[in-house]
Amino acid sequence: MYDFDELIDRRGTHCAKWDMMETIYGVSPEDDGLPMWVADMDFRPPRAVTEALRAAVEHGVFGYFGDDRAYKAAIAGWMARRHGWEVDPAAISTSEGLVAGTAMCLQAFTAPGDGIILFTPVYHAFARIIRANGREVVESRLVQRDGRYEMDLGALAAALTGRERMVILCSPHNPGGRVWEPAELAALADFCRAHDLLLVSDEIHHDLVLPGNRHMVMPLAAPDFADRVIMLTATSKTFNLAGMMTGNVIIADAALRGRFVATQAAAGVSPNRFGVLTATAAYEAGDAWVEALTEYLAGNAALFDEGVAAIPGLASMKLQATYLAWVDFAGTGMSGEEFTRRVERDARIAASHGHTFGSGGESFLRFNLATPRARVAEAVARLSAAFADPR
Image 1 (cartoon, one colour):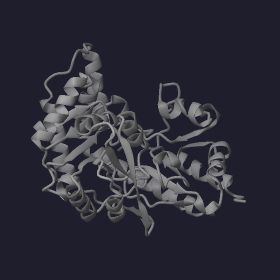
Image 2 (spheres, one colour):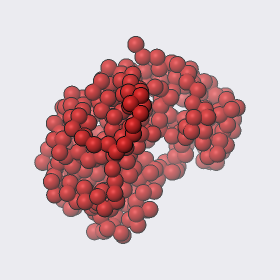
Image 3 (tube, rainbow, N blue to C red):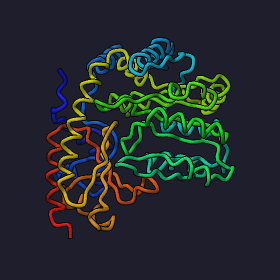
Image 4 (cartoon, helix red, strand yellow):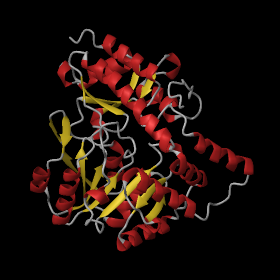
């Protein structure tokens, strides 16, 4: 029904993933380079999305967006169907993407100099936006047990200084692909309450859970925690709509929500017309497409992991969610400069550098698997050749 194997040429379309990789990584898209870095997909969204855009373009008038009732109802319907989470439409605010939404949370709920806790390695934009807003990044390094990441709340508690005001959680985790268990989420909620911390739960990948795994949204894992949690969700990763710059900031607590809305008002923020229209269409009619997508991504992950496991010194963390493979090169004994050179210059693959994700990421690279399977197979073959002689 859905052709995820179609090779779509995105070069020359103002596509960051393809058109910027030579500038950033020295890997040319014109010289058979493979872009496996920035987190968007090489797939078209569901047909309902393109039909909604076509209708808007054919209408031909692109004024300010108004009347968001259908949009918020679509979000609430999706969360109820897909996650068993009943959302009050009044609790939903719209942000210009979730990085901007995170920045608004920092501005609404913290002050310059406050400590913001990240479980690292983690999505690199968090640290960037924290520092840009004059806050302090507080790293709590994840520990590896049985091939997966776990939070060490005991070590974090011992390191607190009293300046910390907020935790930003990536759930499911990027780059490790972890689906946090309900007990882990509940423990984090208890930790935040005990230490007077707000929790921003970035769940942008919560629809991209691979078969055999189950994600639980934070409000269900910790139902008595509504006065301290800010939920971030979006269609951007789920339906490949990142360029629409539209995200959902869902805050059940009226007092917290009032502070956030006031911060948005001070910044003059308003919705992107096309982002709202595409999000509405995706949430209303995208269920079957997402189910087919996650099956396809699971096949890509299996192919990639099998290939990586056969390369001496490389280890790929088992993916439970997202389409982002996290590969450890520590076993090669190579420096970061050397294994990165082999990937970029020899294999001609642009992959995200692990050190940018914070403490614990130094020996890793992140590979985007949301591309036709032929490209994943080609990437495996190139990596195998590039590391055939690990000396």
